[in-house]
Length: 87
Image 1 (tube, rainbow, N blue to C red):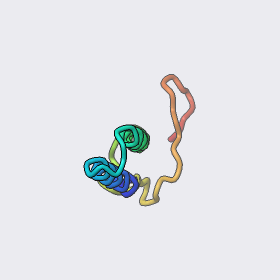
Image 2 (cartoon, rainbow, N blue to C red):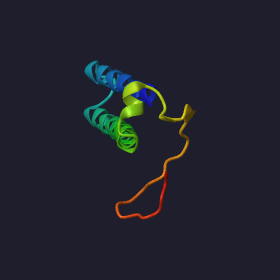
Image 3 (cartoon, rainbow, N blue to C red):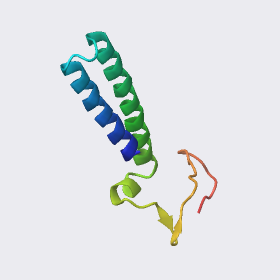
Image 4 (tube, rainbow, N blue to C red):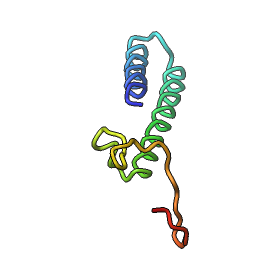
């Protein structure tokens, strides 16, 4: 996701430069800025979801969560009060 975010940030810089030299209008700049901002916000929300799901460990360390040296490929959601044994 980082590369996609980086591309959007570069596009935002290009948009600002285009506005500053008069290539695009105020309205075109605002529309583009809002469009790019919305996409960046979606990426941030997806990144935050990942942090919450794995406690931030994998993202912080840059590695996938592992159990007994095997990469965890799916997650099990356990709700408070569940009586099943998930161990």
